[in-house]
Length: 312
Image 1 (cartoon, rainbow, N blue to C red):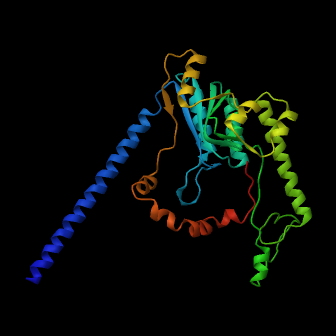
Image 2 (cartoon, helix red, strand yellow; image 1 turned 120 degrees about the horizontal axis):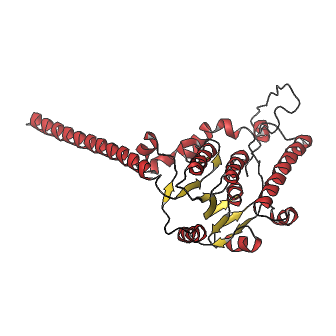
Image 3 (cartoon, one colour; image 1 turned 45 degrees about the horizontal axis):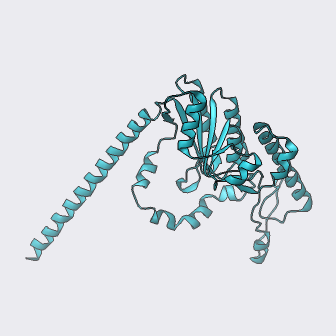
């Protein structure tokens, strides 16, 4: 009797395993097919839609698979759209707080070089480096409550020198070149090093201001008055001349149709296709994914958090 019960349980386990396996296989198959179909149909249209989302960096990927915007990819999208005769305009859909100064400038420069009419649609936030990109377009649309501006530069970091002393640890300084370890968090920041770092930030800030002033056809001195790093709501940004109009995606569509004399707008969506791992992770609940994120980030980001980084 006990033997029959064991066989019965084993049979049900086998059935469950088979069903789960079939479900996973079918899900993976449908995901692959849909991604291929999506990639094929996404590039048909007369207006390129390029998203600028999350932190802007060269690579666009941070730890734990968090996706941001890669300047390398966006520049390729811009080049492709610029070379496509079917594309009449480019709309940048922005929802980003900014990011690397270099990556932001790379995209802004690419926008300025294109021969197409360009538009920026700021959703929740288009600040700092993301605003730099938006300022390079021909027309900026934002919501009255969108966060914009924040024309400033930051390179702050946590200093661990006091913590090391507390636990009787020390930083052994081995350098060739007086300022080779400039900005390391394991020693106190001397006044001369702080002055050097501040000078670099001021130079980047000045370049940021001059670039935005040129893009927005605004006197540099006037822009300096509001380029304090403060963010502005869309309603304030319009008064300050940082954006051109209020609206949403439908507003952008109507504006493009009107200015370019188009009867309809069909978006050609440029976006990076999901990798196999990203698709697999997306099928499961994110609860477990985020449990270890705090501790894990400290481990996986050690190389970046222990060096000075400059962001706009």
